[in-house]
Length: 166
Image (tube, rainbow, N blue to C red; front, side):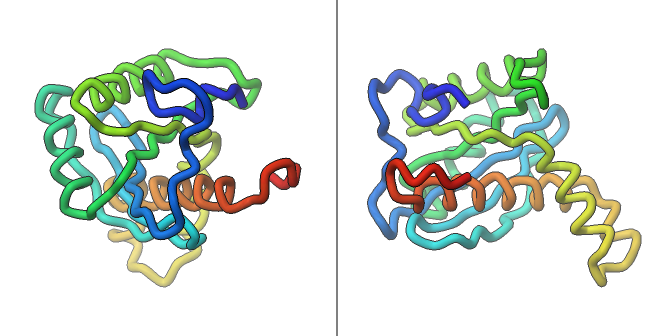
């Protein structure tokens, strides 16, 4: 992954190394909903916080910022939908534009590769004890994908520099 995923928008150098105990919020940005999860740097666990129904960037940005404030988040981790071959898609560009709007509104925005998170979330939900109707709720899937994005970020930043672990 390029180093750009490791920087808040507009920042130079690696700045995703938030202090232990800093709260972060993660987003799985889709066309219809934004899945939300929260976690704490130093922990490897993330917790789902539902989904925000998309109403257009002008309304979605304040909704995300309000959620981040409620959670006391120091940064927003945005899942970046990169293709399996590492190339970017039209959805990647839409997510980058949304992340830029968050950054312009004052959020510290970090990117995390979200390849396959939705498929993994679908697999995890299909094997759960939830009733079928609940497992098929798209908002629950978006929330579960946000949890996976944040857990990936938390694992990555907890690794010692140069460890080479993935």
